Image (tube, rainbow, N blue to C red; front, side, top):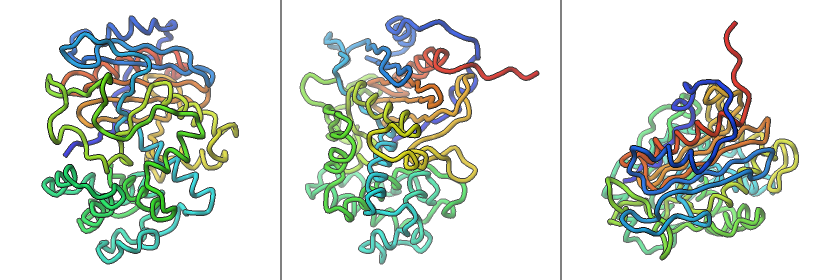
Length: 371
């Protein structure tokens, strides 16, 4: 089973706080790729709520000469969780869902198979990783059965969730956070039940179309002329390399950097009251950490990052074949989005983190030194 990972904060906190000049993005990408085998990387910079620059470097497929382009799609991995949470917030605003409704009420068809510890879990708990759910189901053979499953994706999700909710929790609800991909999958199934529409259609109707995002797709296998993910020095085209298609609510939507930026800019503007999708209070709900944690709803929230003053909305995502990272500074309407078509086995994560550090030096003031 592939694991959609989250990095959130710690890997960037130790960067030096000195001011930096406006980065030369192509040069930053070239330097970040030195010593790594990642085939391609990309970056987009947001300043004052608009796209200030973007660049890509490398090849779409290892061993071939076709270069990546700005119009290419990249797999966002778990960075898609914030998009799933925003779709749910739209349904909450229309009264179709409630943030505080218990899980047994929202998915009564699974109540009989649901361990009692999960019955009063809420949508807020699911997105802030405070539901006590394990990261994934423990039975890998069961998970792999979905690669050959031809049932509609909503039916596959319910089958997966029936198993997930029968497994023991890793901790109490609303206790210490425990990162879980099952939470967004449950939220997607709840939305599908409330609306009668599949998750993929809901994302189009509630997020992508209103923001003018035309590139997002959900299938895990790239089409002709698209970048592929890579793992262990090869193209990730073997069975079970990618996640099964039903898993996309937890991460795996593919889109261009420009379309990802449309979503992120809307998030930046939302708390100011100028977002297109939600009321200001709904954006604040999405961006507020729950309990004594850094976990908001689909986002991590850091007080500082890379030696720059926050707050910072952040997340990282990977299925082992791709890597993506986002850091948004709402105070200045600034942000950076970084992508790579390989992850830790080929240095995609290291290259992306290097790119992010270089850009973040220019996005917010430095954290004041201790007197």
